Image (tube, rainbow, N blue to C red; front, top):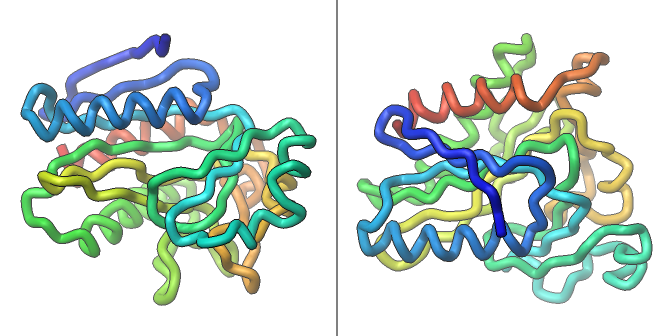
Length: 219
């Protein structure tokens, strides 16, 4: 059973899941929230959490080719492998990475604009640390220099309900990404806030900045 810390802010309910939440539990929670949001039983909700090591594979991955040596090998490293219903390809979630799952009803039905807005939220968070994040013209996500610092993969359900979301590397052990081809992109690497700043960056402080900028855009 997931323990949730909730708080309504700016008309948006913010849910923080403490500790490390198994991916399957967060996935089930999203499913319940999507159904309730579609039926107007809950307001727009923003779920924030960290996961134990898990490789997730989105709908863009047809054969798992970007899972490196394969699922059995990845599991032998101590990570789960989960085939998800989000957009995108293969990526890694783990401790030190902030994952955000907005469960929102899109009023303007602009799915492309929604993705850009998620990117903008994270770019503004990075700017508070003196980093210049940017949109790549060919790939979804947020970049610093020539490396990806945040992955984005979403799902749109009936009723124009958005789910899934983003993963921002804060103090993530980036060696986990070496075992796969993250997001199916071979020509660029990944980075984190801690690596770019060359210092420790407590995820709790970053999470507060994410919530603040998310509320300015969606609250």
